[in-house]
Image 1 (cartoon, rainbow, N blue to C red):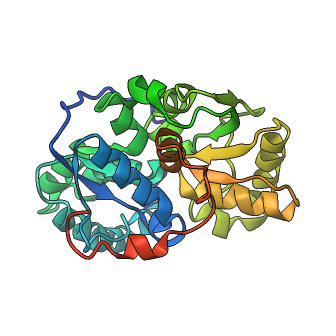
Image 2: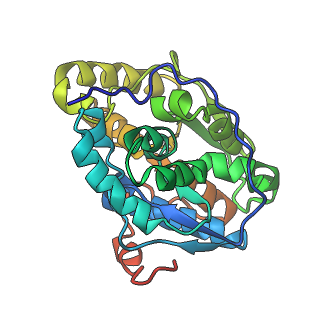
Length: 288
């Protein structure tokens, strides 16, 4: 068993981004699929609105990160092989969470080093992008947000996960997307770059420490007076929103993709915190 730390000491990496593609895969991630399916649907709608065909492989599964972070490489490889097969075509993969994007982009080449799938893992890693990373660096979406239908005043606290901030280095992309939405004011909590305490299996293995960290983060966010908490990582949203509920603080939370979709299309945000399970489960084919 080998211990891994997928988010520590990862500096901003330099990537060469492709031109706008005709089609992309969407890697929905476990937490989006199970708890925030509306975020997946909203991401699909945003990509389709940009004229991109979205392919959602029904065979996709967990990226293998929980096993990998716990040191179970063989078990992680068994799960990750499913992803190598599901996303085999040479087109970009848009990943809905920073932690899962980091697993595929940074850790798959290490996980499969010396294995027969090494070349496939390296290739998949090279064409996998965190959601905001793709939206900004490939689609330049932040330059198109001035035409958003909903420009009503909204104060937002933006939480960028440790994996997105340090692992994938996309905090600037998150901020650019939100700050360029007309009518949206971003307020910054104290110690904005501090972990919320989720950390995947950390929240299970170190429950008391995780809860204390989440309490600090929730209090800092509430102190901003924001009307909504937005994040690109659902683990953080779950952890912070649950803590806010226990603190009896009423604050809606929303995935970044859903904020962008509702503002661009004049939605009232009525899907915040709700599941569009029926819609999400209708993806019976490969194409969304």
